Length: 495
RNA sequence: GGCCCCAUCGUCUAGCGGUUAGGACACCGCCCUUUCACGGCGGCGACACGGGUUCGAGUCCCGUUGGGGCUACCA
Image (cartoon, rainbow, N blue to C red; front, side, top):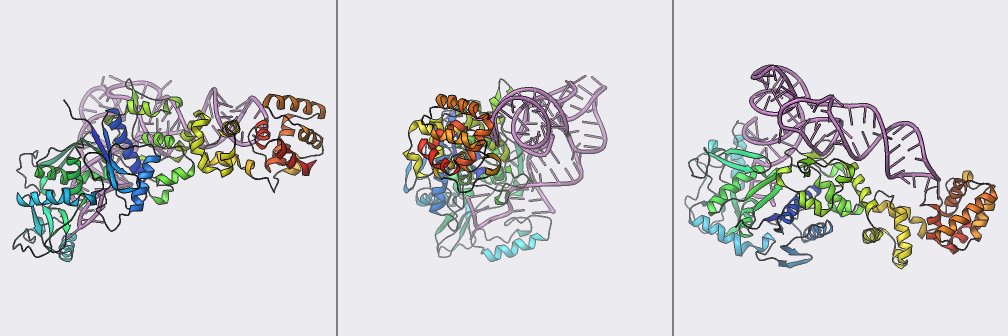
């Protein structure tokens, strides 16, 4: 019986939750959900200088907002708690229970050794190789013989720990190569001789093992958390041979690897701050639906196929989560990076807003509205939302409703639209007292006829008088949302 | 510098030896219209370059160019 699928998203809390990270997390999530497996959130905080609790909370909340629920991982806002059988899920909480034991084991069986070369010494040696064609490799190539390699070990001295990388004749190598069989990128060979003995644990207190490094923790965690599929960004491919060697040193079989292409900005460079919004929080604040973010991200470097054919029409592009989960597959992910297209996100968001019921939209829209919103009736909210679903974002919908909360002080286009011709009609509107849609429609027609006006004349005059501008929801909805008393009050100065 | 990855409209992409190279977003035009939108119809627009292989190449191979990643006691 094949093992249950287990995927994980393992961000480091050194900053905002990046949109590229969210896409990777989404793929992990989709894959786990598709196979009825488990999805783990693990916090990689071994860079103690840059990791903060605030950033951890931002990650947790960002993931939750995106709808990427994790089966195992930290409990939101509770640093000492977690769910899942293989915790803790914050690496700094796994020092004693996991990493230390693994380092000691490697030291004992000779797969790793202590290194007392100082940072300064290493930097100097590295500099030496800068001028040559060959890369710096610890105790190899130009550096051969300069590494201390555990010689004259003195337990009272500080030390770091390095992993012995293969020499070339280990049985698990393929023709002298460490081979990565990646389910997205295919087979990639790394000559064993091109690797060097990398540091698995930093220099610690005198005589003690220090904080282990990323490449080490990843492997220890992925094995102990039973991760079957490592799905991560392209920027990790060159780390993979190091990790594969560690798996073998530890006596484990490497998992399945899938390296997803990066997300680029419109200029082709890695997506960063200067391209605009990169953190998930910003997208939330901009008024995007989480479902729109999921969809837009999913379509970057992934083409869902139905019966061997790509989805083509605009309607088909708007998938539900259920459809995405059903259609998702790692071998349908492209090898080439994709540029992030804000226009497409806007379009998807708009589409989703149009398709949603007012009840679905309400909780997402609420944060963009004043507290007065909460006091309104369901019927009123329903009209308000359906009248503004033309908006491209939640933020835009909120702007469309601004006239409900504050009376205008400036009136754009008043000269053009509020003419002597329409004032008598305005007066008649002010005298109406039933704003039920059909009745209002009928009353309008009579007023129009009596005054020899077109719908456009009256509607625009009312918009300016009531909202201060020529843009508003449908005129009947505008009146309803304001209510009889407010309409009369706002019309007073014109009639 | 070294190692690795990538390459079809502006963008996301379909294509898996024979296509008028298809769709979506954006953009432009027309129609609809109660403003803003929506919607409908139409238009613009691509195989980076050079060699092979083949009767035939966007599709396979090799180079070039361009872009990206890694090269830390960061993750």
